[in-house]
Each structure stands twice: as C-alpha cells, then as structure tokens.
Image 1 (cartoon, rainbow, N blue to C red):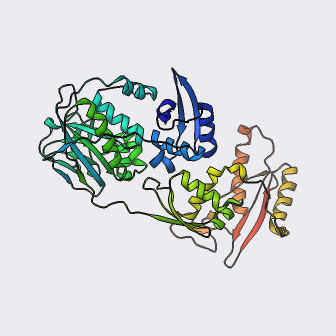
Image 2 (cartoon, rainbow, N blue to C red):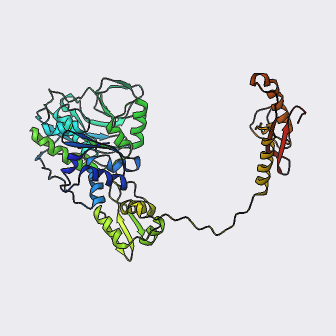
Image 3 (cartoon, one colour):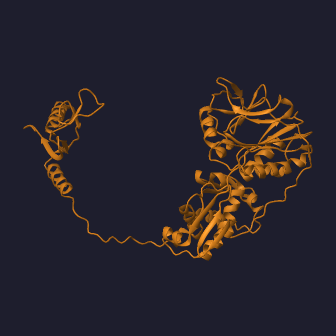
Length: 466
C-alpha cells in the first residue's frame, strides 16, 4: 500500500524523518519495498500481509503501528457532528453475508471539484480526483480502511435492499463493464434495479455525477469470503474488495460514518439521521497469557514491566496479576487469538535482534540405519561401475498383494525388481542409437511386497541380462 509521510505526520506531530520511520517499520512490522520523494512528500510502499490487512491497510493503521513501535503519541482530529433531521430511508438486509449496513441521506449537496488538500492527498498515493463526494469516500477508505459508497438518491426506487443476486441478473459497473451475476453474488439493490456489487463495485444506475443533489451514503460490512469469490468470478479487483476480502471489523463502520459526515459538512447539505442495521454485534474477546510463557516462546527473558509498556503503547486494555495478563482484544485485531500471537506481538516490538543465537543441545547419539547404509554402499559401487539408476513401476499385473481401485493390468504390488528392470533395459537398448550410447547399464534399488512382509532389493542389468 502507498502511504504518505505528510499524511501520517498530521497524526504524529513528533514524527522522525522518513528514513527512521521506514527502518522502524521494517524492523518491527512490515517490509517497506521503497521510499520515494514526491514533491515535498515521501511515499512509502509498504507490503502489508493478509494477517494484518484488517487493521493496517490504511494510514491510521500505520499511524498506530509507528506510534506503538516508537512510543510516540498520536491524535486523531476532532470531527464535527452534523445536526440530523428525521429520515424516511428504508434498508432491508436479506442476506446473512451482510454483517452491518449503515445508511445516511444528505440532501442539497453541492457536487463539484474537491479542495486542493483532498486532491493532493489522493494524488500523493496514486489516486485521481473524481468529485468531492467520491473523493471524500476514497479519503476515508485510505485513511481508516473502511470502504464507503455513495448513491444518487433521486435515481433510487424504494428501499435499499441487500440480497443475493438472481441467476442471470446483470449490472453495468461504474467503469462500463457489464457483469452477469450468479446466485452466490451479494448485491445492493432497490425495488427495480441492482445498484452495486456488494463490497466490490458500484453500478452506473445510481452513479453520483455533476447533476446529483441528494445522496445516500453506504458504510457497510460484508462477509470476506463472499466478497472474494464474487470479485474473482467477476474479474473485478478494487481497493474496496481487497479490504473486505481480508476481513474488516463491523465496529469500524461507526468511525467511518463519523469521518465522512464531517468531511461532507464543508459541501453544504442537510443531514438526515443514520439508519444502522447491525444484526449480530461483534463479540468482545479476551486473551490471557503469562509472562513466563512469553519468555519461553521467544527464548529470552521478558519482564512484566516490558509487557506493560508495550500494551500501553498500543492502547490495549488489560488486567495483570503476578505476571498473568488478560487483555481486551481491540475490535480491529483479528490476528490476536492465542497466547502465541501475543508472543509474536511482544517479540516484534522488543526486536527479534534481542533473541540470541544459540544452537539446541542434543543429548543423544544418533544410530546408523543399517538398511540405508547398505543402500548408499550399493549405489556408490554401481555408479562407479558405470550404471545409471532407474525407477520402475511398483504396480504389476501379478503379485501376492492386490490393490483396490487400480488399473486392470496393474492390480498387484511387485514381488521382484527383475521384471520391471528387464522391460526398462529392453526399451533403453532399443533407443541406444538415438541416445548415442554404446552400452546400457542400469540398476534399481527398491521395495518389493511379499504376502507377509516388505523387503529392499537391488537389481542391475546390462548386455548380459538382469
């Protein structure tokens, strides 16, 4: 992901220089593939792996990481809360794959060019400006990680319905691509039309354009597997789909709605109340671990004070008694499930350079494998005598042990190596002129299967036979 140094500096006032920030991220969190100077800004290309995409595929996610790694304070802006009027917006969720859906009508919006600071933020990370409403949605997604979509209210017919598509239904996406949908695809629709492919791409029907006066904001949470399968089958890969397929916390919706509402206040309009349908709230999870176990996993002595310091730097809520910790897992941190996850979390912040190199002590004397030793001797002898090793089929047309569900002419396990080696020798001798070889000398070491046992045999063949 492209991350703007100036953008994160808005949250961390005491942010060190770009090189120091990049080094801290590399040593304690993620690979920084490049740092490029762009105008008066520096752009980090950070490789965020799927296990942390749910909380770090955003500027605020990287801010939290840098703050925790370097022990610096960060501060989010004070978002203005618009006055809300009653709403008649109706939303129906008809699929369990939609885990939360927030909608808000804003009337009399002035759609036009975005302010320079919005354009600069987007352009710095390689995104183009479209209009102030769409840009605000994109700013929020790249800032906090939650995708947002806006519909033209006056192009809608009736309620917003989140449902599975009907077989053969079609949608023309914002980039004019026509998609035929399947019954496994979740869509956003009204009473007549499909408005968007849920979590993947919006459609042309309710597109926000220069003539739009009233909009509906969508801030939702969708099942990650459903979004990924839909994006793959449709061949549409968007930044929104990338975030949803890696799983997002439904709790993030609140913050995203608050942030975009504050941004759109600058463009005028009358805000209506938020409609929030949240069928099954995300459970609060607890995770317990012991200082002694963390030290054992990491192979170094970790103090209780060090763990307390790390938990405070990352704003974990926790309780501690005699080195036993219980944390309340932040809603966005799906990667923290078991004690070993906390060992990794603590270890990376402490620095893996603290783990001393030490070979394990082995207190036993290995015993030689007699059969393997013989195999090595036989192989060395035959190779030295000019033989080449081959492998022939284990399955034969006759034998003492029959195999179920096999080819009719290969129903038994072999009882000798000779039969297979004779066939191989004959084929190689017939092809010798093509291979420009005067002598064909081959051998095989392998298992044969008798009725009551298995044995290792060796067979070799040349012009004199097998």
